[in-house]
Length: 123
Image 1 (cartoon, one colour):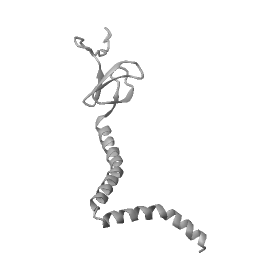
Image 2: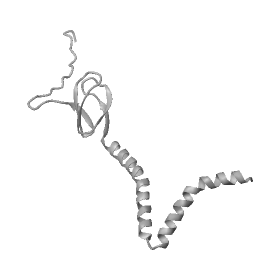
Image 3: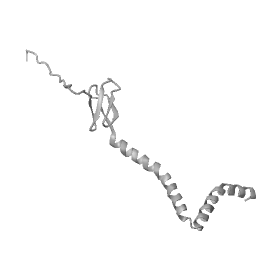
Image 4: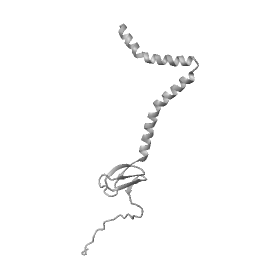
């Protein structure tokens, strides 16, 4: 092992050794509370994105609804308790309780039509 490669390894370790020396100096002076608070802040900074990621996934699983448009049958996704527009037919849709339904203003009666087969007179 040559001297130059040893020097290159020390150059990579220098910042970490400096941080370690500063923490050791603060702890030896009776400022352990400062070291502990810095470590807690650093730990929270590392944990906060992980907790936020899993929290967002949990919220998304509870509020993301996949259903079919009640008018045209096109399947798409929307957020629970929101209004959106069908990408296929343009109908305004209300998302409630995990299902899509047509948005009807107050005073409007929404009727669902059914097809009745016609019987011929010869039957």
